[in-house]
Image (cartoon, rainbow, N blue to C red; front, side):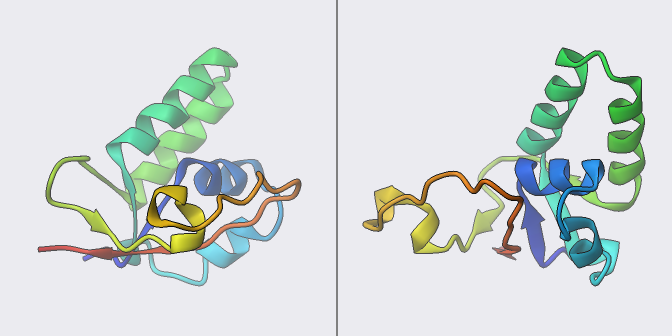
Length: 108
């Protein structure tokens, strides 16, 4: 069962080899990671917008080992307060260099 849900930027950075994201992901078994169906749709949209067969292949290879979870009422993410202004904390500006955090998943 997945323990961490990756967001679109994290997967994008990993697929493009930016920063240490790919190396950090390799520290985990694929079964510990997942993405949402929304993330998959955003990745596919980006690859289509760029008309990149290479990105489409990379995405397909990635989702062969990392599960894409339907985004419905079942997954509930434990999101850090610093990432969500609706929870009372200020939203940080977008990083100029790739940085990421694994988001723990709670299933039930």
